[in-house]
Image (cartoon, rainbow, N blue to C red):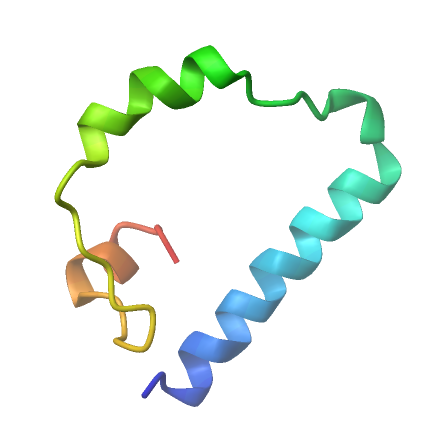
Length: 64
């Protein structure tokens, strides 16, 4: 389970992202089918449990 601090940081990041999109929707670009197909081999076999907290090294690296 995520800590309260991690949830607060996550919400702040998502709020900043939502605000940026609302203020500058022109910067959004669709992801093409070709890009998706190029990415498939990169993530083949990767299993992600979205219920598990991120590893501390990801949080420390600012990836949360």
